[in-house]
Image (cartoon, rainbow over all chains, first blue to last red; front, side, top):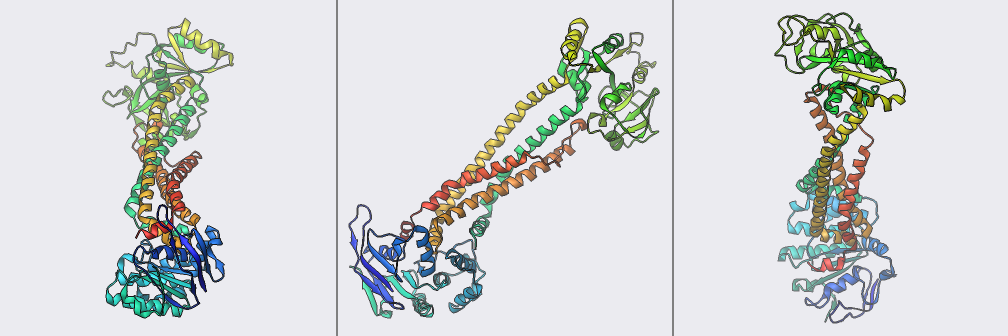
Length: 209
Length: 395
């Protein structure tokens, strides 16, 4: 269960953005809608423990994440939150499977190659595990970044514009993979987007004004 | 996966710039290694060769030249001294031991030294084969001479006039090898020893008329060992003031010589330090630039659960790995280069070897490490401090 309570934030010399309170139950799938500039990325960063809001609390599974020390918060994020960015951003010097193992070790979890295989297989890219990111197509890379986000079985899966740089076919594929993976890993899913192609797939919507 | 492995893989992902940095550091460290080894070996050799000799008496001229010619057998002698006066000095009560030297001939560039049995005592020579020279034209040769000239007991050879070159060969008399010295680890390994009258005999033959044998007998120089510490004060002054000869102290002149070489060594040292500095800056720029490219990567690592300190370690480790590899390569390179230089050196008296490890090299190692830390600490701190929200939203 994730809750957002009276959160607001302002960057220096800009107007304050207030966010509506938000309750997300375990396993729900939400769409976060908003035009660019409406504070979508800010809210996502606040939700994922990257940006401490000026006011308000964020609770993830009974943990007030901004009450944690920086180091604890990093570790909490590594274990409980999986993030998918608009672009994949894999570490270029590491192979696909090394990228996933790195995610395990940063979360202070033991290296589990069986899990790596399992995730890559479920995303249909098991044959690429020893390839380097530069050898993969954009769509394949986005799948790897989904794999990296779910590798540690996070409670919360957050995707920031996961489809906006993809064509229709890939966008649909990525979206269904996201929903499938969140179900498979029993993770709560939040997808932030302004992509109209995505809207119909969700019943729960949090709209930024 | 440890942070070290991430740093390691990151270095391998840009082999060219990594190689350039390693090369720069290796070059600087290599020069420093060569200087360290060479200056240590030269000063050791200088000391070793003049260990038991307190003073050299020879003809007036440059004292350094006298020492170079009579102790290290490198330069030309300053001239000759009359045998009569030399003998008087040798019997002075302040003198414990006096060794006469007569130079002037060579065999394939190896100096033939006319001397007496005191030479054996002062250098504590031991034989590996045969016996010490006794009769005229009998020689005892150094171990290196035997090896390089392939001379054995009973072999004969002709000496040539002068200290180098074999144009003016003394064809009338031939030397015979009577003994071979055990390796001494000093200049005597590269000498051919014989008695003084052989040297005189060589130059008295008919056909060598330019040497006036009617003139009184002469020596090149006299190696002196003092009887007591008091001699240090009295004897050199006596020689310099009351005779036509000069006295030079090997210890003093060696120090002076070394300080002269030292200027060159200092210059090279600064040069090497400069290279190391450039290397440090290059590593810094390299890390700093790659950090700019990679700060998104590093931010992603944070979102995956890596702490600030882990990022710091990743960046620092990269710098240290670079400089450490460079330092090790440089030390190895320095040894190799010195061995190479040594094998091409003409004068075997001062041959340098690269196959010696010195404790001081640990300082080079430490310096390499320090440069690595110095070059990577700023990028490391930057990685530590980076605001990931800002980086991630700047897509």
